[in-house]
Image (cartoon, rainbow, N blue to C red; front, side):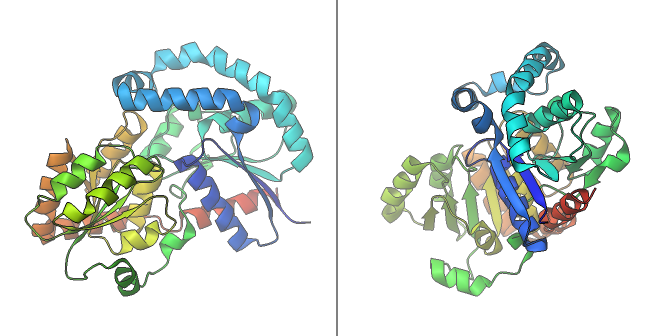
Length: 373
């Protein structure tokens, strides 16, 4: 009988979804016969509510980030929402029960806290014995991750392990395998081929600019600032789903002094990182893990309060990143790093020390091991 693996995430074009797909790919590599079902759990259980919450979240992040900073991992907010969370879990239990009965998974992995908690509560309420694995996609766990019925948690550092231990999770149930990224980030890239295809010069430093899957942040302002840098550079800008930003760059390109390559949604980020000297980005969990896997120094710009602020702390503490206060500061730091080769080399060494390029494969092995229990 083929192994049945259920992977739950939330939100389209999100790091949680990318992590889920990375795990699916890794499991298929190790066990080609496995039957894998990847589901956006919020959309599956509450499609209307998902759209409302996503729209509200994006609005808060863009317009009132200080509100999200207050709400994120706030003990008072957590306690007040616990009853609502339990109510939602009970409301969703019928759909979850149908899914589990229809698919009958041997193991369940969740790349976000909401589905992980939903399944954990279901296990307790209905006596479900299916192994459950919670896979974090940021550097630090928040309060909504802690459940007794989770068999294993996957984190990226000892600090995250300590946080779980403080909340009563046995240390042996927390594995430091890293944030799951596409297995191809562990492979070598023909950089000469990539540069040739993209029209990039091998002798000029390449700056990669990203704003996550949504293309968030002051990227247009940043590109204008990079265009003023005196040291020769070339820029790759990835705008994600932000079509308006991509169109702006394409229209402005003829007037830029620097070489500019603009891309929207793309599946070759591993290649782009391989030919880059550094990356300027908001520190989403997947992006920073991919960058570390490619030993790429990071200039942090415009982190979302909460999870990305915690990711920033991790990177800065370990010397793999510097933080810019604004677009002008990011351009200044970029030029300083490029002209100070020793600092950039030291950051590369620190990135290599933190890197976990085999994260998805290691997690996939645990998933398959759990499917045998």
